[in-house]
Amino acid sequence: MWKYYALLSAFFAALTAILAKVGVKGINGNVATAVRTAVVLFMAWGIVILSGQLKEVKELSKTNLLFLLLSGIATGLSWIFYFKALETGEVSKVAPIDKLSVVFVMLLSFLFLHETMDMKTIIGGVLIAVGAIVLVV
Image 1: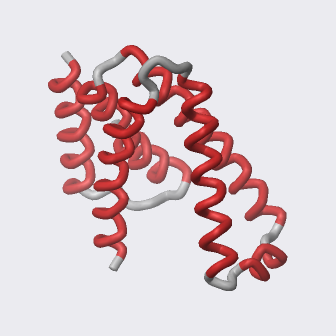
Image 2: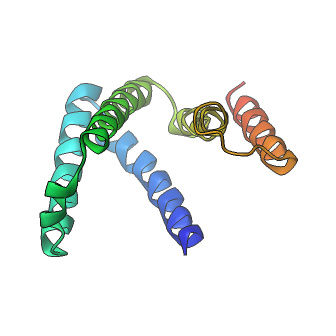
């Protein structure tokens, strides 16, 4: 099932890039990020409330909170820089560079989470990196 969720994530990330490029036209990327973040905030809490999962907030440990806070900061910085890139760059060039995050995830998961790095993963990561470079150069 995770593969379907991942494909849906990729599709909506692509749609996000196109919609964001149109939405950021003529405004500052920070304003665009703030509006987008507010929408995500309301959607996420709406899902939690409507699905009856609000009580699970009490079950969060200090470790959960710390790493979710750090993840939120990283997400915010990613979005800020993404919108700054979209302000002046072509979305067809910004998005492939942004997707180099896949390569960074592979490397960081290997280094910090001690996930296995087989040849298929290495080749895939190299192809993603080369593809992004080819698209941008």
